[in-house]
Length: 118
Image 1 (cartoon, helix red, strand yellow):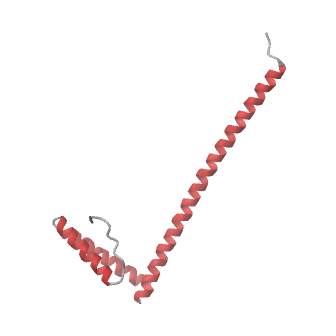
Image 2 (image 1 turned 90 degrees about the vertical axis):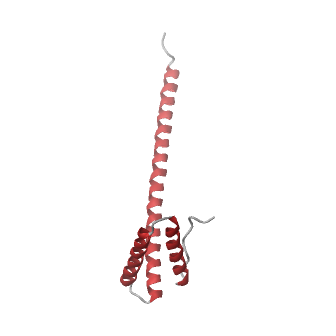
Image 3 (image 1 turned 90 degrees about the horizontal axis):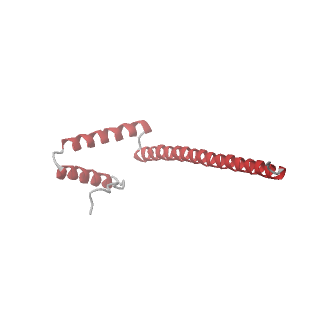
């Protein structure tokens, strides 16, 4: 018993259509992943540019060069870390953080403390 020639052609065409759908699906997924990675890279570049611009603006506002401002900021961070390392318990850590937040607010910079409240 042999298959009808039209049945063989229909089977062949069905296989071809399934293969094409599979290839198109794969390409669509690959395109979406590549587009997502490209978008993430562009977003990361934009974030870095904004960070650099923010540093330059703060340096200019303080009357320092960018390099001098970066050094002053690094020194301030190092001093904060030393004070946090010297704290012996949670209450002292909270006191150091509160003092730092108050110093930032006094300088006109918003406090970024979000933990430990409430």
